[in-house]
Image (cartoon, rainbow, N blue to C red; front, side, top):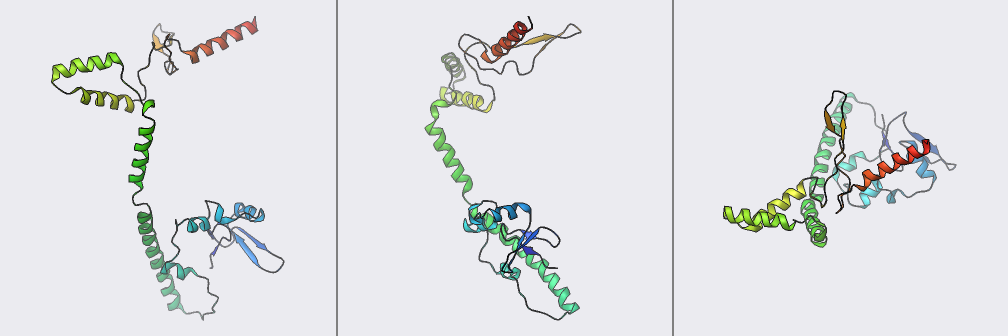
Length: 226
């Protein structure tokens, strides 16, 4: 059983699967799926599409020079059938696939080495450039921390750093104005808070403009019914 590679993306095209295109000059093109066939008919360059093997090899994301890749080369050499040779060939194919998988893992580790350090450097640079967008402590909070530091005998900077870390880690941050919380009365007489009612944008006058928009829509509906 011969497993051919897709002419466009390079994936394996299994027997009885995919599409075979025969050109007028007699050359055949094997495609693993209709997606590759359509891109081939649109005359697209596989080296410019990120989901193809050609692009990954061009970008250095796939092994190109390796001894295990030579075994997958197509050879049209007739060989007389031999059961022992056939069994040895199958064992060798399994062993070669194991070696290739191990070498691909090593290749990936070498290629991704230092990625974490680069990401951290980019994140630090982004924080330095946009430091004015980070949450800041209020003057009242700073005074409280100063009094607390005087009582505990600790530096104020440490408490400020801890408080800022809490603000940045938490999803909800302190904002100016009061938080509008909607409640509804249950049938049994209890009161429960409507989930997500206090997540609107707050302003200095304590109004939640998103919730007010909903109220305006309800008023418009009532006016229409009248």
